[in-house]
Length: 457
Image 1 (cartoon, rainbow, N blue to C red):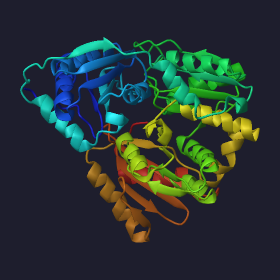
Image 2: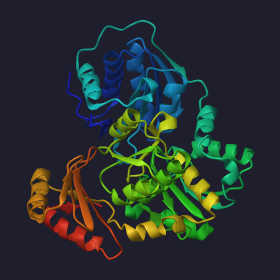
Image 3: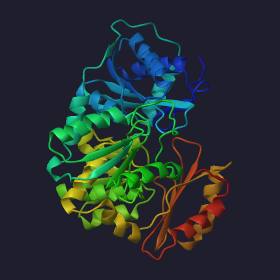
Image 4: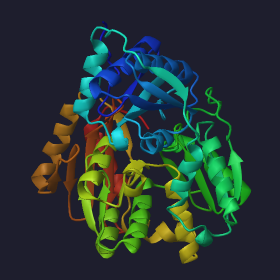
């Protein structure tokens, strides 16, 4: 059996035809069943043109091993997470490549109770998938899943009180990904509960050809379309999702993109107002604003390695009410400790309503007090050598050092984090400051010159 090379740190992603095809998907299905012992598995898929065939092959592989497969069809990753617990399944798999290029696809996995599957668990699935095919087991079948979207919508809306949602206009950009139908179900339920929100939709229909490009709103070049649409519509808030909508990105009423680390701070504030003294988990890339918000609100900050499997594990281990990453992944204890791209914008809207303030007003002072560079990506021939150059240049200056994820060096008024991507062949740099007088762009340029290589957006 040929090796399967598309397993990553905590999911599976690969180039179609080279690393991933229907044969690989079928083998992954068999491997998942063997390694986990699952007898009932939920599957779903995004709208990429290759996803339906890959999902069908995955289901066949699972069924060959005696698994009852409950197929959600087109849905978001978080709907698979929800349905895995809601339907008392032993695991869940979403076929998606999220924001990767069009010639990629992949899978995201959870186990029973929607628990993350750690790297050792993924290694076991891979080993089983690469082994000889086992004899077929009886009892396997593929069924359309019972209707779960209505129950999922109820869980999402349980995080907010519709009475506090302000009567504002919201521009939503699904990027022709999977978000549209699910958003419509949420919007309909909000209207039925008396919310006075007006929604303007763009690129709303799922279209695996992605005529406007792969939906990845984190890339600055992809933000202009949403920003312009917010201004043209006179909207009070803009929302854009990635392809499987487990991340959402927010724009203020002037169309300005609000970086994810400041949304983490806002949501930490929301949950600490509800649960004083609660634990909040965050990633180590940009931390000062988040930690300051948590300290002021009387909470406890816990740093976790970047990546959904690690954040979810940290929430479960610490009992944290919420966890956030600057990349716009937001995790909620009361959503199976999983990430959601629908809950965050609802919480921000409710905060706007409760405070009578626009998003720009909620984050403006924080952005001035704790400026950040945004994530800068590099393609370098030797990542280890590049990290060593940064360490050699700055370590003699006596910074505080942390290696939770990559290399973090913190000085009195600025801080850097440099790490390898878990999902792409990139080196990622973040620089943040403490105080409005810090020129984070200049600091980032100084570090980038030592990294060398080719900037990758």
